[in-house]
Length: 296
Image 1 (spheres, rainbow, N blue to C red):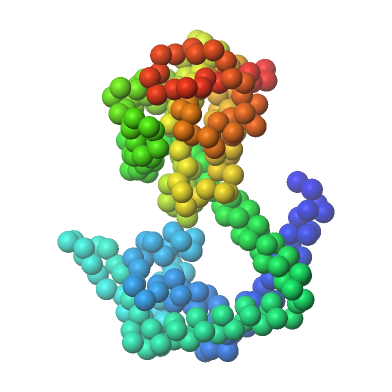
Image 2 (image 1 turned 120 degrees about the horizontal axis):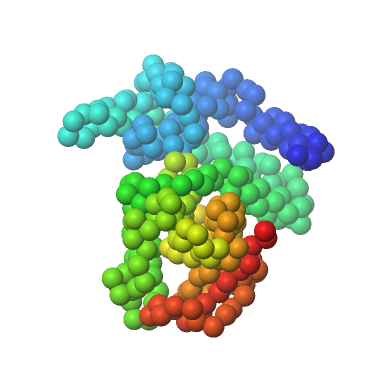
């Protein structure tokens, strides 16, 4: 890794932590540090399950418990058991907590406005645009891609969302039973694999790889990215990971077919080095067929 780039990242982190007041014990002039204030904000006026809080904030259970105890001691939060077996726990704001939430919201708006007010209009616009870009890239850096069994709940979520989206976007709808199959057994090693991308422990994308043991050709199937994760470059990340995994299995040619309605996917494939070729399958929903030769 480039040492200069690492040094610049660290300098950026120091500047941001100082500018937003992360080093202060009384964040936003209140009686609690940033960690407690951030958790209070995430609980929100509707409350939140503890497991969702852990996922969104990437907190371990012990640290989350300490933050919650501090907020409970201040009378701002209550933690309740919910669900049929009582194992699901939910954090909710008390009336005092809701008032504190509103005050933090007001002060956060004022702090953001103060930051922007010190800059002329052109630089203000540059700062906001740069913040949006940094947020997008940081979110992309937190994505994890791994192999999941097709029967895993996260995998099932992605595959169901894939089918539902194609049903909405294709002119004639989409019936997976009438499409070329990609069965669970075909997506388990050694026949294939299903790659699932997660962000904050939530599944946000997938792509399937159908291997043909003994063959140097494989197929890509079931490419999907959640609407909430679009704009992060996740499709390109999934494609690159699938290509790397395929190459590791001796694949030299990757093939895929796609529908003309999926214009963004077609653009992704073309910009990623896939060439359009004559039809190599009888997929009824396909209008374009692509392949890419992987390096040896």
